Image: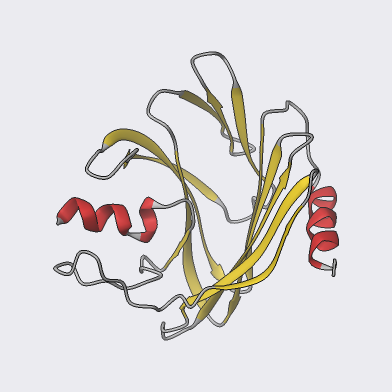
Length: 199
């Protein structure tokens, strides 16, 4: 039961945890039940030969004393092999936001302490860079964690936790790429704005 509850918790997923709370509450003794707090909504889903784009949101944290709505934009450029993840957190109050990335157990990584860019290096020397574009008030922490490649399986791994404590509205914006190029905030925001304005 303990491990089942850990792996279904919000912090064991690559998403934002707000004020250390679950986005869907659950009973520790009822292992296959979740409250429907999140009430997920897909605002836009589009897939083409060149890209995939998802705009979705949930209100799992609306139950907090200072409510929060979490909206995520996810863009995948299939031609240039990079991803954009933008998290938009709105409503009221001061909150702690923790965004988790769980890393495979069979890779190495290095961090640039100034830019907070993490480069993940696979055994075949393939590199994947996690690039935060909104670094104000942002901290980066490395934690011991676990991944599961199948039910009943668990393997130790590293976890990246990007964290900030701020008044909302607040945003996270990341580019994940295999390419060794720089991305500007203006360029990436322009892509997201173009996508959200498409019919």
